Length: 255
Length: 120
Image 1 (cartoon, each protein chain N blue to C red):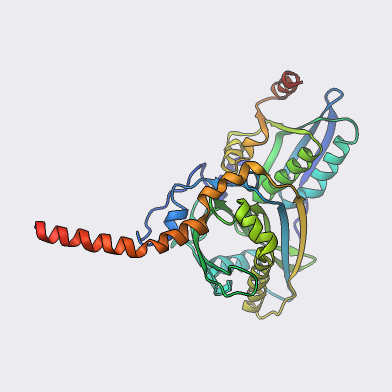
Image 2: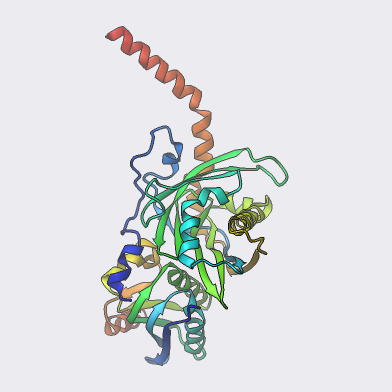
């Protein structure tokens, strides 16, 4: 395969995300539109590579067929506290998948802190796709979803290579159960994916601390923290409502 | 089962520079070949690792991830990572994934080695 033939699998070169055809009330735009996409190299916290795998023994489908279903039904495999909104055209390079999360303020507490953001599809082919995060997202980096054959058996895999985007997220990761929650999320996804194919698979995880250092150049990412921006936006909703009402009354009087 | 379709050979360019000649596909299956070559390249006193991508046929997003882990390993050993021979398509990929902010990109081996000498 030559470089020319895999161009279609990659997103077009872009530095900042711009999203169209989205309802203006979708507050995900707040934390996606105009934000730069960032790799693990631009984050703050420790960099981890975590690989989650589930074998799908006896499944008489191709890797492509399994991946087609995974892409088409992506949201169905997520826990209820995580809501993905793939684009209408599907998981395609360059497209943005909106994400709404509810996070607990501390371990054991209910999910109540809203985060509205999204990820860009960096790469997609028949058997895998990778998403890349924007500024302000809880992690800076990539998540790759793939299906491949191993010893005559299909294996569905999720691999993350990322680090907390800013010091606030890193504290949440290290001390408020953030890492465990992220791992539980992907265990849930692969578990439900295997059940979709009538298999009760055993999800396994392998994790590697790629870089134990905090990258202080990423501390400034706090200014774009999506949790802060989402919460502030929602708190300001009554003010926006009053302003709209005032503007409508002024318009009516002037007409 | 997909197998690695890559060869990575090591050669020296002076006392402190090692060049990894990459031929084939850089995907997740290239990890062992790439990391083994890096280990061989740094077994001496190499301070700069240069990746020659003239023979690159294909790279997917997993391959990009491999380069990030290679970069981190190199940085932890206080080594620099440079590249040359990337096609325009893959230069765009390096820019898209922001690898270009951490890995020097040059057109030819001579340019890459000249950059090493300048910084020496």
